[in-house]
Length: 440
Image (cartoon, rainbow, N blue to C red; front, side, top):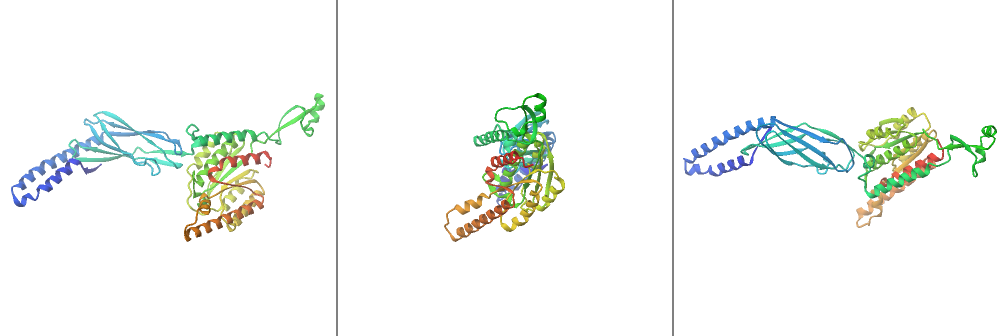
């Protein structure tokens, strides 16, 4: 318990300080000050005991959800129970994350003896990850407001902030709803392709490919029977996410890493819905995590748990370690989806070597996320020499990036060059195109 002077004690001390110069003029005034100070001290000591007894009989508990979507409002409730024989007057303050809105929310309380009060605060956190709420600080006033006592209650709680499209689709904006609806239509329309996995036998109809007639069954039944095929199921899809410094660049929808995680979860959900097995890996200058492909739509939740709180640590990305991990653990031919970016030809030389070797065994889709700031600098008006120099550097970086992507395409790697905020639909559309081409 921490003590601090209350409003009345400060007023009393200021009053005594104002009267103290009178002792030089009227010596008898010193006795007045002395007799005023002694009762004040006695009342203060008495109030300390009351506050200590009061706070020892106060309990604080928390009620809130453990999972919420990014930038989605949620409520956190504090239940304060006063089991003492005196009224509790004061202020309660919850320690909130720095990214929470609002990040400071003190609430005044007045709880009668043996009473209970509940405070409710609406928060939203615009950045995904795991956050801690608490402890709770309670500052109580004494009955004569001479002192205030402060005590912390360790009712902490953790909350997971996931992409809002993954947690709930009810609170989405109109644009987000339209995107998900369009995505759903795309996935349904593109699945009706000609596959190589046997599905069933059926009677021959006009327009069927004669090459698919099953002659043994036709001879046994006496009329033409054809084989029906479907797009293959139970294929492995590995989503690799770069967490290096390039993915920490800001966009209109958070960082590039935020957009990559959002799209990765949507892609995983689409793949799992259609029978594929899906896994995820993430790296920067070393492998930070690897989750082998699993089947079943429910496994997307465990995938979300493993990547929802990824953050860019501003390390230089090194794909070599992840390449070695894939070579070791992913022996089955798979579709590898790499969400990353690239800067120049020199960097892509090492990068391209690893990707080219990986593409010999797997189908590789490299989604390159642009840096919006470079485009803004290139198209911004020039008003000074510094602006011109900045624009020249940005233009050179964009040129180098295009050359690097061209070299990757020339190596036979599928490249998708998109804005981070527009990644989801093109990425899943490209995934379905590759799936229907029966390359696995």
